[in-house]
Figure 1 (cartoon, rainbow, N blue to C red):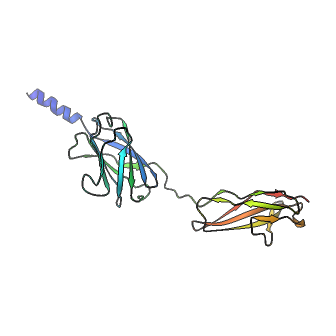
Figure 2: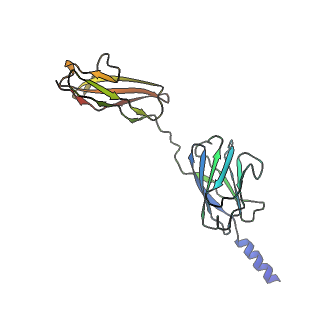
Figure 3: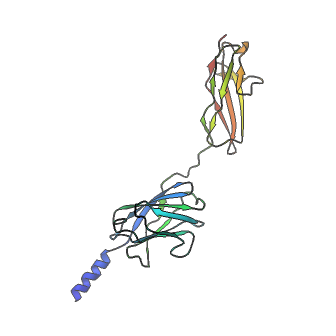
Length: 231
C-alpha cells in the first residue's frame, strides 16, 4: 500500500500546469497565442486584462471552440474564461490560438495575465504574463504619396497636379507652384491651385508643386518631381 501511495504521489507531482504566450492587436481585437509549458493538457484557462479592460467576447481558433464567458471566474469585466477544452486542443508543448474583443483598446504593450488548469477546478495556476509582440512607437504624420504633375510642359499649355495622399485625413491642405533654376526654387505668384498655365518666364526652367498639410496637428510638406518647361 505504501508503494502504491508513493507512486500515486509521484504521478501527481509530475503533472503540473504552466504556460506562456504573446499577443498582437487589431483595433479592438486581440489575437493571443498560448503555449502549454506544463506536463498536462489544459481543461480550462482564463485571461485577465490590464486595469480598465472590458472584454466583449472571445473564442479559440479551432473547429471545436469551447464556451468562453466574459466575467468568469470572478465576475469582473476584465476576465474571460474558456472551457472545458477538448483533449487535443491544448496538450503539453502545443500552441493554442485565442481571439478576444474588448470595448476599448488597452494601453499599448500592457501585459495580460493567463491562468490555466488541467483539472478544471480551483485553484488555477498563474502562467507567465502574455506579452505584446508589436510596436508602440508612434508613426509621425507623413505623406503616403507626393503630388504628381500631368500635362504638356510647353508654354501656353496648362499643367494639372494630382493631390498628395496623407497618413491621416488632413485638417488643412494648401498647394503652391514653384519655378526652379537648377537647385533654387521660388514661388510663382498667385499659383496656389492644382492647375498652372505655363507662361514665358517658365520656358527653360522646371516647375513643381508643393503641398503643405496639417495632419494630426503637425505640418507636413510634400513636393512633386520637377518638370522641364519648353517654349
